[in-house]
Image (cartoon, rainbow, N blue to C red; front, side):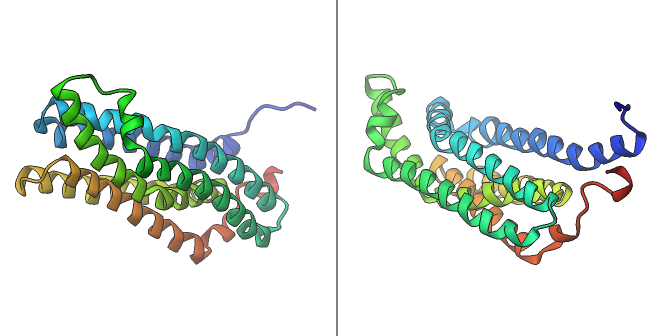
Length: 232
């Protein structure tokens, strides 16, 4: 028999879902500030090159996000069945697939950066400068691919387990209190260039991967009940 949603159920939707939405909103906002504030004063070429590199990175990120989302669904099914010991084997399988994909794309960044960048940069002297800068940026992108695979896999798994508030908090603290200030100081105080700013981004991804691995290994997600017995 069909029934309407109860207040208790609605509160649980907000409890687990709202942090996830806020996470995406504020994390993407941090990247927009990074582009417009940190990189903005470095000139049009730096911003344009970063946007090109960022667009190329969707080749690795979006399929990887699909893989980790699918893996998180399977992990969530194990949690729903009460078989939490099966989550780690599923995480390892998801991580192998994600790392395999992102590592392969990262290898392309190293082997043929000019070919990838050449699809976007204009001809002429400006294009030559953008290619030179883009090559360095793509090499840094290749360096963080495996860290990003770990971060994506564990982040989505923790969210599937209901650990959305901690995951969102960790990502936002690192983005706004570590990554953004470090990149700003490096560029606007230290006089570093766009490659150094990209290095700060790579460091952010590496720190995030390590922090999420620590959280997952700690096992706090095992005690989270997504649905109370009275709501089943």
